Image (cartoon, rainbow, N blue to C red; front, side):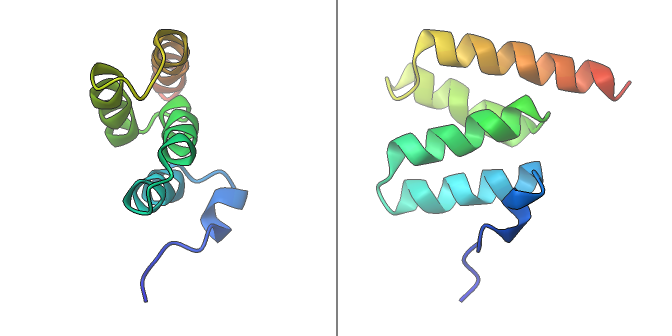
Length: 81
């Protein structure tokens, strides 16, 4: 089985967080998925940010959480320039 184990998340790898979010979503754990995507987006992961925006439109992400993730994402992107 190729399911993410979570080991990559311990070190804070954003792609590992994104993948765990996908797995949690598939397992019906919406809140857990959103938490993983918020963390990954805050580390500059674009795919996680896209999921958060889509989930905001569908009512799964609060306005404040999305705004904070957008600010953190931009800060992470700016820090890599």
